[in-house]
Length: 317
Image (cartoon, rainbow, N blue to C red; front, side, top):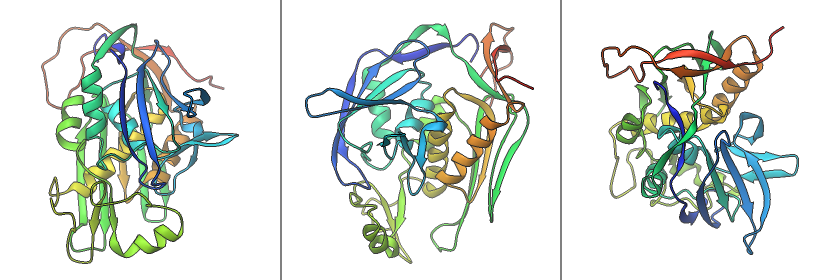
């Protein structure tokens, strides 16, 4: 974090697959982008002409049922963006253009790992401008029924604390707390796959969801077992995937968060509600840069040794 510069890709890279909900084939190409560009999604037609463009931002969220959908007044532009967004934020990629020739980010294997591989293949390079962070100054909480989501100040960087509680013998109560850094994201989160229950398949198909789901891209659970031949990648893969989704959804802040995020029995809808509540409260955050500071003792949970310098912030009354 100390003196960190913005980053982008060294070169472009493409991946292809199908959408987990649409079942439609799509090619996704990641391109380098300029300083302060952020994450830009572009839809292109069969001739490669850009038809629409939108910046990844919480205000661009148009739906949160089973996936995070980005769009504008013309309608949805990009569905199921969360795994790609998690990979970009998890590896500290600040600026990138995401070009898609279909309506949905390809699900790949159901995790962020294939996007990590693509980013690694392209490589990263520092840009000239310093990275800016959104520093949370006071707690912001949203409660919906028995679900809770809260962002609170956290001096060590970005942390996710997730709990899930399913009435299912293979899942039950699971909890995980993690300071999100590139190394910890790769090791602990990136390979966790999206999951679903076999009993819900018919209703999902009838509603137009999960048309591209398969054992190759979804962890499928019956009443008493996991159907995937390779089994679980982590003993608690379910809560780890919830952490992955939260990282992706909160990437829509537009800049890395300096905060701890707690989610209890949450999902895309709750993640979006908490981030929206944060951005709406102009006294709850500010944008900062980090200047050089004396070196501190290294700690596994301390991801930086910088001094926050206000760069700009919301207008306050």
